[in-house]
Length: 503
Image (cartoon, rainbow, N blue to C red; front, side):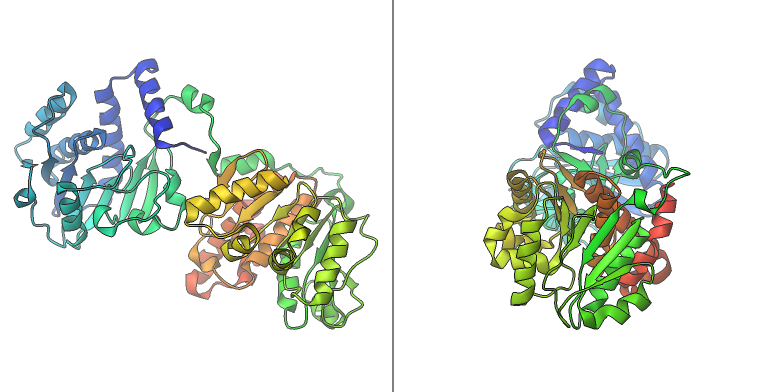
């Protein structure tokens, strides 16, 4: 799914009105009906609903919604903020419909005295500002926002919490942004919804399709996308009836050290469950029995060292290589990684301690083969690429790093982002907080390695790997809950994840 900026969405709206064709009034009513369809199952008719309508198009959506709610006997009060200055025919038409229903109490808010008291058992639906806001709220708007936030009522925002900017929010001011419990956004998720700074304000969000014109959506270019099942299914290939294990790649996983054998096991299980044809795991001698027992399907390659990775020879036969989970940062492992990067020219997966070694020996960045996939968490990425001010800044730096070094950068988080050398950024839609557990990233490394070995491009291996990893976590959630989930549950759920998307 494409993600557009607020200015692009305004153009898409205008194109839809002209070319569908549909009147602006009818498009607003279409959006209001979608809002109602969601609200009718969430709000009790006995609850008091306070609807706040700002001076812009978002306020018009709120007014149109009020008419629908009132027509169906919901207990509504409509508050128009600085409405006296508005003379548009569109708003007069929408208000005329709202006034038809005697149960709607309509009040203009011009100053602080007009702001109503809101009980904690009420529901607030707010359309104060839309996605076109480009500066902080001020004056009477801040006073209304503060009153809503302090009410304790359930707050439902239309399109985006008022006061929040659609893209970058550098230093959000709590008293100038609505804290919503739910955000009902139209047609596309907004970019800020994927950033942790905006998450407390947005709450749970749902995308409501309102039928914007498909032609302009298709033609409008963007660098931002949300990963969906539809996109992933298009990229995956069915297995041939006469295929053998060699057709699905010879994978090499370099992982583990003394005390970190679990990282090797989890990454290996991720690779095998993601369809690796033949997996070889290179481990220190002390981990030999552990791996043979834990993942009997894998071949063991044993290092000269008892406890750490020091190097590996004869890597030419492998379709793809992954390195990093649990290898540690010893001088021997640093030297082994340097030799590996110099010897290997094929795309590889680099994670965890391998990234930490690269961060401390920065000349190694230039040895990473083009087309490789690196999978840092935010701390590891900051050590490699430099500190960032906020999530938006981090994603911009992620994309810049990807393009500069011609590698795919997977920045792990609640909405893991995947930056590709062509300048595109993909945000994941699967996964849950239960996956914030040790070893989860090791499973992801194994998945991406397996897909890369099967002949998928680095881009496809990364985006499919991230989506399926998150989906497996969602399936594991159903059985284990957030608090009790462990990384092994994610690996064990990979089969169900692939099956769920029909692969």
